[in-house]
Length: 337
Ligand SMILES: NC(=O)c1ccc[n+]([C@@H]2O[C@H](COP(=O)([O-])OP(=O)(O)OC[C@H]3O[C@@H](n4cnc5c(N)ncnc54)[C@H](O)[C@@H]3O)[C@@H](O)[C@H]2O)c1
Ligand SMILES: O[C@H]1[C@H](O)[C@@H](O)[C@H](O)[C@@H](O)[C@H]1O
Image 1: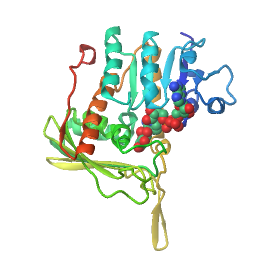
Image 2: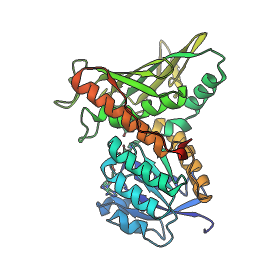
Image 3: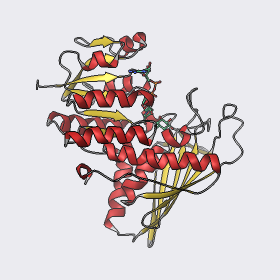
Image 4: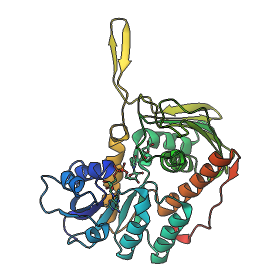
């Protein structure tokens, strides 16, 4: 390997372009050597001013480009499986934006491909695990200083949703973060999902069931409620309160400066994830680069990506039927402990 890990970035949209800026900027030890996007103007714009980066329309061409030693997948989720299987076949370490794939069957195919290799190559982009506040909450819950966690109250609000967003994607794309955070924070599996559908906001596109209230039951008997509201119109807000036997802990409020003026106090509200989770993305990509340079993968695994897809599928069924839906999971391959 050269001094700097050679990275191919697939997809040069919001996340892909942000990761391109990050690699070689706030994250050292790597450089972008290839970018693929069918929209070549986007790809060219993402790498403007950088020397030695090849630009491709096809992801497969970027994977074969000279100097590629690792892959960052930031294309739309429907394109993830093909990219993941191709990168696995080449033995390349991968950071794949969430969700791993759009459904549990395709996620399981990816898990199967990695398990057959017998070593982890894939890290899934559940960046909240790298957020300082989430990490502090995880450490507190693990310490059991407050006793056993009983409830998590989660709030997840976006200013607006992308045009292609469907009612199911509120769960499979947005709530996938809370699914992963719940499994990670509590160290428990989610066993059943129920979804309440309030009357949609007038601010949501016609036909979109927004907001939703998603309830998880877990293997350890905890209950988790998630408000997901992707057209709140006012801010990007992610909060989590853990209620335990001897106390509670809340994260997500301390992200901004509070200004006091005569008779009035106010604070800025982040408008998107790129601002709210900037540090988390930096730490996530740093951890990925460090592991990839050793030919390894750490952090959220393909199995975690599969588990999130299986829970999301139960959630989407619960959304459609109004029923409480149990989560069905395949057997976990030995590779994932
Ligand atoms: N971790 C987070 O907080 C976070 C935030 C936003 C998006 N995401 C995830 O990142 C991924 C990308 O989302 P986005 O918001 O950047 O989308 P986007 O629409 O802004 O960008 C996607 C880009 O991929 C390109 N593309 C389409 N098909 C492709 C293919 N086969 N190969 C390569 N590129 C292809 C598109 O032309 C587009 O430029 C999704 O999986 C999404 O869920 C994660
Ligand atoms: O793809 C995005 C991303 O995952 C954000 O972190 C989340 O807040 C949005 O709801 C989702 O659409």
